View 1 (spheres, helix red, strand yellow):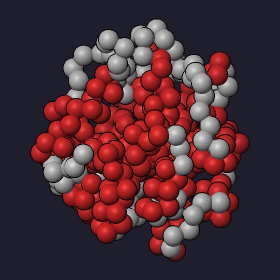
View 2 (cartoon, rainbow, N blue to C red; view 1 turned 180 degrees about the horizontal axis):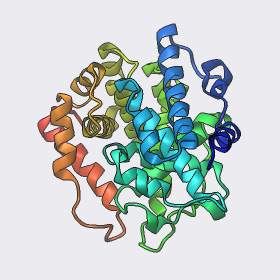
View 3 (tube, rainbow, N blue to C red; view 1 turned 45 degrees about the horizontal axis):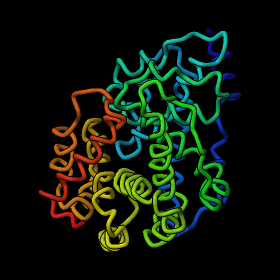
Length: 328
C-alpha cells in the first residue's frame, strides 16, 4: 500500500482534533491548566490513531508511538488500538493488525489498547464488531469500558445529561452466562468519561455521579477513580474531598485508582501525579497499589455467572480496605 493511499486513509478515517476541544464538547472548564491537560490527552489519542492509520507496518507505528511523552503515551496507544480495530473490521482490508499490535510492544499497553477497541465499536455498525471470542476473556470488559467512555464523551447529552442505559447490550452476549455484566462495564467507562466531562473538577464530577440512579454509582465511582489517577488533574485536597464524596463506594474508587497505577507501571509510564493520586485514594504508593492488582488477578475464566473481571475488581477493593486504610 503506497504512502499516498495511507495518508488518504488517515485523512478520511481520523476524527478532527477540534472534536476534542473543551469548548466543542461543552465540558466544564475548571482552569486553563485542566483544559490544556484534557485537550492534550485528546490530541495524543488522535496522534496515536493517526500513526496507526498511516503506518506501513505495525512496527513503524510502534516506533513513532515510543517517541511520545511518557505522560500521554498510553492515550496514543489507546488511539492506535482503535485505529487497528477499524482497519481489521473494515471490509476488504487486511486483518490481524490488532493481534500483531498486542503481540508486540503493545503488550505492555494492553489495557489501553482494549479500551481503544471499544472506541472502534462505538463507530462501527454492529455487524462489524469484533467477535467476543477474539479478545482476552478477562480483559474483554475493558472493551465495553472504552465503548462507554466514547458514548459519554461524544454523546454527552444522551449518556450524561439523560443517563441513558441500554436495557440489554448485545456484546459479548450470554454464551458464558455473564452477558448481563455488559452495562456494568459500560458504566465504568462512563465514570471515566465523567472526569473529562467535569473538567477534572472533583466536586463537579461527584455531582454528575450523584445524578445517576444509585445502583449505577459503584461502577461510575470506579471509573472516575481510574481516570483521576491515570489522567490526573486533581490536587491532593481535591482528591481527598472526592474520596469523601464517594462515601460507601470509596473502596471501588480506590480499586479504579489502583488499576490505573497497574496500567501505568506495566507500561513503564509512571509519572509523579500517579503517586499523589494513589496515596490519597488507595492509601498506598503506586507500586504497592499495582501489586495489589497483580496478586489478586484471577487465574480462572468466568464462572458461576460472575465475570472473572468483576471478581478481580472486588478482590482489589477488599484488599485495599484491609491494607491501604481505605474506609468503607
